[in-house]
Image 1: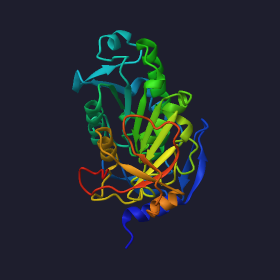
Image 2: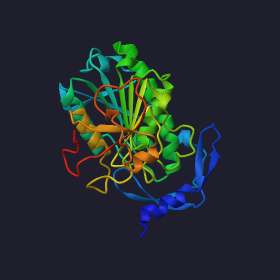
Image 3: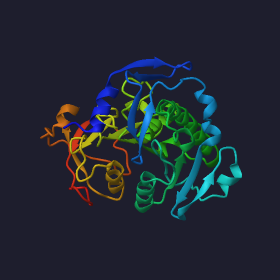
Length: 328
């Protein structure tokens, strides 16, 4: 029997492209009202035909986004970083000799969500870093998913401006950065890199969102960073199924996650940061990955703290149903 979620997303698939006044393109679905689950598990009745005007006036990421710095000196209580306030940065624990990681949450979430908690703790356990949590909840907390999608891209450009300013103050370099985004934040991570000329060292997109992005030219792209990696665990539903990065991993086929009905993608990634060994086998295509038909001996490790610059392709792997998820 088809589930409600499957039915909804079959309907979402029938779409046309809508051009907004500022040149941003988003698809409009044939049905107006549909239930969509946000990234903290709540169902919302979404009006896909909501007015497309005056989006920018409602959300200004340059003034409404918040940036929270965590380091091993302050692993649980953040230090705020505010663009334009150099003294605040200079008095913080930001250390330009350490690698910065930027974390970008998904729709309906904020800085305190499960994605940030899991990945932040993993990064600081792995090495001493500057972990900056982006809170863009002012742009994605409403019920207008169409607006949230546009705000995803607006916020990405703003985060890029913040990074350029931060580097000018601290001397940090784009070659040090790792940007990680989940769901809508996955596409936003791509927008960050795109606005930085593709010079960020490493961008990871975790289940980049599918609704309203299938025909969207602003979706995540392999050229958004020097090395781009995508991990798919909810493809064809809330997550994007087709390859988007230099390397795309499909744990358990990328469609149905082992052991849980909720997203495990950032738990897989966090475990890889902590040293979990997720070994993927190269596939001829993403369809082969979905079917688990990848007998190749050409392997690559998923996730981790270091980019696999120069690698490309689609990889399949299996996980355990419970932690530890990695099988080695």
